[in-house]
Amino acid sequence: MTRILTMDDLDFKDKVALVRVDFNSPIDTDKKNILEDTRIRVHGETTIKELSQKGAKVVILAHQGRPGEPDFIPLKQHAKALGRILGKSVKYVNDLFGEKAQDAIKALKSGGILVLENVRTFPNERKKGSPEEHAKSEFVKKLAPFVDVFVSDAFAAAHRAHVSIVGFTAVLPSVAGRIMERELKALGKAVEKPEKPCIYILGGAKADDALKISQYVLNNDIADHVLTGGVVGHLFLAAKGVDLGKPNVEFLEKNELTIFVSGIKDLMEKYPERIKVPVDLAVEFDKKRKKIPVEELPTNHPIFDIGAETVKKYIRIVDDAKSIVISGPMGVFENPEFMAGTKGVLEAVAASKAFSLVGGGHTVAAVEQLGLREKMGYVSTAGGALIEFLMGEELPGVAALKTAAMHMKC
Ligand code: 3PG
Image (cartoon, rainbow, N blue to C red; front, side):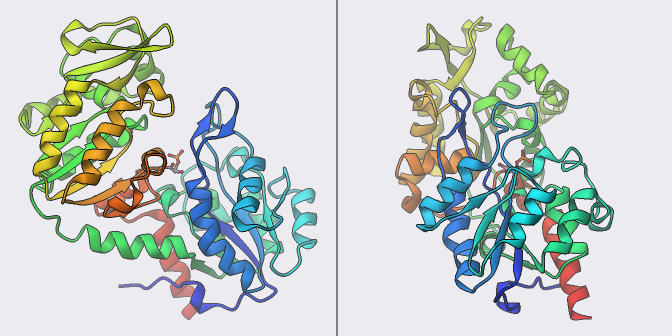
């Protein structure tokens, strides 16, 4: 097996270290504020702090949101939060690879830290490509000459073959940061052979992976049950033929999720007992929570949470489980009116004797907010990347590090 190199394999003193982290955080989309800084803290207290202490000039690359979505904001606040976490000044420049960014890198002193602009402001950032293809991009070509080493720490985004994830590994000595290293070690162990009964609880708004992971864990007899909530739950209900009502159907259509409905329907027909969908929900009515049993759908109000009966039903399954994977919240927990579903399920997971693996930026934020971190088996920073890892897929960010390690040894 190809080994990846780590921060122990290089000397960082006075070197410019370009570090790709995952600072992608839950955002209050009205005020455009960071709601929860777990990911900034996790990278800050490990990789970034260590590099700075070793005398590197630390240049940080990260993304926040997706272009066109309300949480797509600059990284100025992230830099400020990082400074607060580390108790030292962190510079920010609203430029990614132009003259301003280059000058700011040149001005860095040993131990200094600089955050560059959101990488997704580069129009081709999210284009899928190989390290060699991405190395030809303007982003890599303009920035790499100012850098000595690339530190890949964004495990949570390593499933994306994006420019900032793989492009620099083709042209710079590249090693894994401490979070990348930790996640690969811990998850490798955690997924070896889950004890039965094993359940997967899938929620959140990024529902595109839900069908793939459900198929994988059910067809391979890894999971005994798949429990659904959040937008994933809506999608599974739609596949059952439930009409969710205009605003909810429109949400699924806008996010191009309805294409998964027929695949989910087939899967539900194959495993009618093993896939669980909500039996009741909570909608927003006059800015308040209003419960609605599934039989009373459709609704003209947006569905923001699972209901109390669903929580009870899920808790009974959680109580019998020996292994639990949970990725994605059950509702819009950032709004206290719609916290109950996520809270109820997460508290049950925390109280259970099962080994629990928790993933996803928003889920981890909810775990932190509820003070449940210490009661969970392993808390990963990753959501989508975790799911792909659990399916045995090679993550492009990890593959790129392996290739870089082979070249560096030659
Ligand atoms: C995540 O939060 O899962 C990662 O930051 C990746 O974000 P993306 O799904 O927008 O690529």
